[in-house]
Length: 578
Image (cartoon, rainbow, N blue to C red):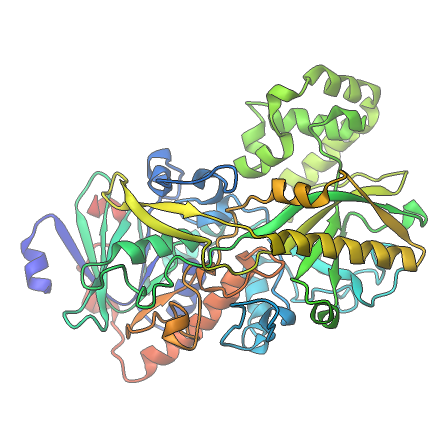
């Protein structure tokens, strides 16, 4: 096979122990971990260290409902570092309840136990620079032991749950040097994987075929191949690798692309607390290592089981900054800065910026300038202190929250999106510049998704009232309709290559190996069986660490480790391949 490839002057061939497709957080962590054990790794990334609109366009979907799903350009990134380049930095793990047997949530049974993944949380935290894997005020060193609302005890509702914040960490910028200087990693940027090649018998993969936009092709022949190119792009590549497996690799049971999940999120109520507003823990705190943390409302494991509810969290946020009716000079200053064509894109990713400023044509800027002028000293002080803490200091503040003298805050919810086999992605007839078929995206929500959000708010309201700490005020007379109207996602791409013990029920096994193939693995949130209440980034890295340990055992179990001397003649950079 090598001889035939070498005869073609347009094709370069590289051998390695492990080939990893995708240099986002999962791929980068996996490569670094394997390299530490002396395993030779080729890490292939479609993008380059610098962003390219032409390369990014390769992720555009063929069919997508933009009322239900964000544009791919907003929620994916073909660039060294992957989606971490545009990620906000929130680090939250899944909960034990997510891995419980929950008959009231169909298709929700994980084939592994929570303890099997929780053991990787500390190592994941170190990669994120988010401190210790302590996610409750009661456990976090250096964080004041108080709930969001003074006097509110933990019970059915827990108000001491913590989210941790990364620097935020752009994995490409943070770990690029380590990748380039490792003697066991060859990083190939600007190479798009177009096919996973199978052996003649169809029971294993022989390697990866890739192309540069303006150059030749490359083949990476490897003992093990790992797809770490994002939730939907991983699924797309499996669909397109159908030469020996009609319907796509891993589609033996028709499950490939099904169970597409994000989250149900938005705001339908305000929390008006009846306690001293000066003691409401609405903003950021810092632990003894200087890591930013923030409290959130969550629900006890036993409570969720008792009322048969999906997992859900809520936390206080600012009023919508694009609405000048808030009368707050700081919020108006933030709006004007984010909506500026010069400053906006420097301050936040497009997705975060768009969510904050809303539709500009519906807002009058002069009303925001009026707020700033009437609140000028505070707005200027905010600009100076926040700018320093966000853009000068090494550990950057993730954002800002404004004190409410009325002790009334909008509540943002992030609720589990229930597994649904009809929520799915497929490949259509449209093709990208590489000739790969584009995705048809059909992200669906159901009535139970909406009702879970309403029930979570109802119980939180009852809990606040029963302890004399406040109440919820709904923003409309039709909360269910409001939830339904806000149900749109695409940033947390979970479920489309789901994990299962039985090949009939999923795409990958408990070790993330594609069922029926000896040496093809997936490192992506696409393997998640449920979506939990948390964004997937933290858990993606925890699963990548678990997979790294598995692959180390596989490689050391009688397999040949390729030495540097045996690959010295192989191409080692994308510029040589293009």
